[in-house]
Length: 612
Image (cartoon, rainbow, N blue to C red; front, side):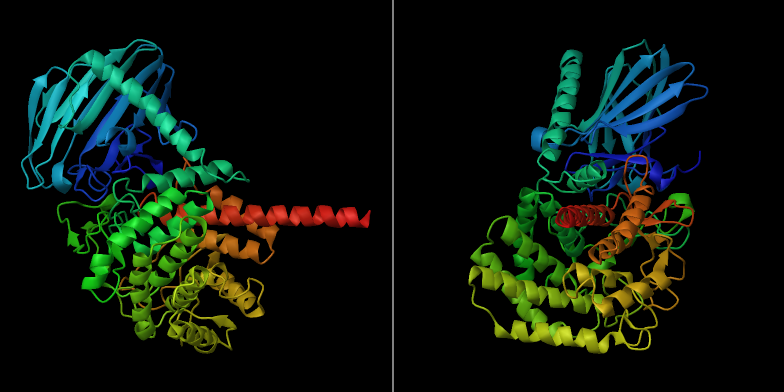
């Protein structure tokens, strides 16, 4: 059995955690009960030791198709054969309705008499803890972890189950239009008989469908590319914790950025940067409630801010700051791309750009959501005061390099954003304003033009003296630091195109010329940077080119409209999946390009009427 391509998976979730469902009907990844809990299914990282929940018809030959019920996160996997047609409906009742922590799989024989096989093979605590199996009834079985995680799961079924070793299997036949249900949950819920079980599955399915449809209906976006924007919004919502308001960077851990390279990191945490960008995207779509929940989460980190000098760059979903990185030596890694890492040592890095992303999201929420509180402002004020003294030092930057700190352009740019947005908030709310902020903002502004501008290369470089540009410079016009049509910016954009753009796809930087990142490998194009590039083109008025590249990039999404972090040489998805960065970039690019195209069309209509 070979590894499925990363792009062969769909995602479901309950606002506590997520699961990845393959085109073959196997759930090969799930951390339970929370995003950053130990895995119970991780065949995506080790097919023998990771564990999976397999469910499929026993056809000799078949084709498969996967789709979401429109405007929902309820996933259908369809199996098509000359022998019959079968379908699996996978979903998780959301935390807001059902207190979450349940996975439901409903299998249906659509046409023909269909024989199915189910194998539930959990491997607790990242495959490190043994477990026992306890039979409660022919249709109810308990899995009990013997490790420190102490997890206990219950599997309930509408068909008879049998135990094989420490796994549970079922083979059954369904007549046309007949169904079988499976529910995997924590043991704190009771479904006492078959009738109530079936009723619960049916009711929770329809209520979950309605929940997602009602949520997406609140979006204010009704422009071009509506389906892709809605799918990206639904994905961002799936990565958001209902209980805490935090949002994780990606659903998975240790999927490789390059096969066999060692670039395998855990993204199941809340980066201030990624979460703030996600808030921009959600606010643009009118989701101020989610933005407010994130602001509340940030406020709750104030205790951490008081105990330490500065805000951490990343936290667990509940705000824990210590995220020590460990290697799971017993997992071989996706396609043998070891090491498999959990935790992330980047939590100890200095990344000065986070203040800019955070203050920009606060600025937008204060403007389009609700006015922030006095106490929250005072805590933010302390962070900006700290930045006044510390912005002018090297850091690890947005790409979290592990080869030494540099004075990165992007970090300077976002420090400017931090001061600029803090000033704007203070002026809008008539808060007392520290004049040092204005002075530091202007010093940074002048520094970017004097220290990072290379006259010979006619571009803003990755850091002073660097031999390469960096795709993060694409944020310069997007954060309104420079006009998107400024000659210096257009010449920088041209150099980015020459050095980093391959067809329409964008690399982060050229590793051989950039600041050392601690790895010797070639990586794929970074999908978020491609969407940044599209937005820069649209803002510069290059609308035909922007639309052409944007729509080409849409073609690189998987069959469900989902993206991993990067795209490899053959267009394969690489890195953790699905990734918030990519989807928020898509939303922003679509929003801006749609607006620019409308403005251009209206201008042409007015000019045409004037000529007549």
